[in-house]
Length: 182
Image (cartoon, rainbow, N blue to C red; front, side, top):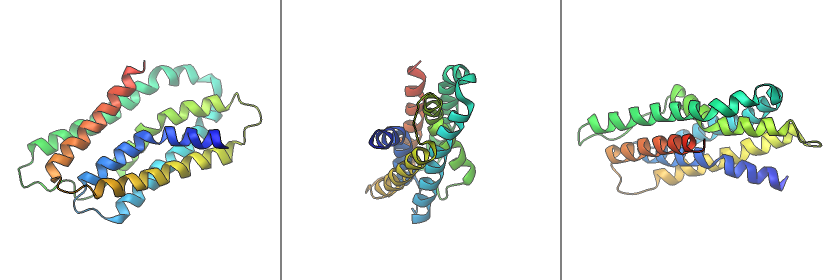
């Protein structure tokens, strides 16, 4: 199970970066935002390997071929919108005031597509305990994302406008990183 835990940690790094930037951007920050980020990211990181396992190798070529493009599009769209909103906002802009479930859903799906590919690889591993593995990955991501949001909220002296620009740039950079893996 140590290898599954390490997979969970590595899969959660994109979710961690998004959680940190969200924690910096949300003004005023509320503990429930960290909880929602942890729950959404953890749930989708647990669900995607299960779905990948179910899909197996039948669609693995399609997912491998287009998964990075889908992630890039979602992250670039959300990050680009965040950048534009922050740049267009006046100097008094205090950042995002709330975290919508739609935004959380898009971010969670975009950051968990790699976990879908991991799930496809699980279909070919004999003796793998699938449900405990998926739960461990999801719980690991949930805790890391929750901690990332709290960490981001504790960064002092960052205005809402600057945090929005930084957060949008981070999302676009993660998308470009995924695109460059091709």
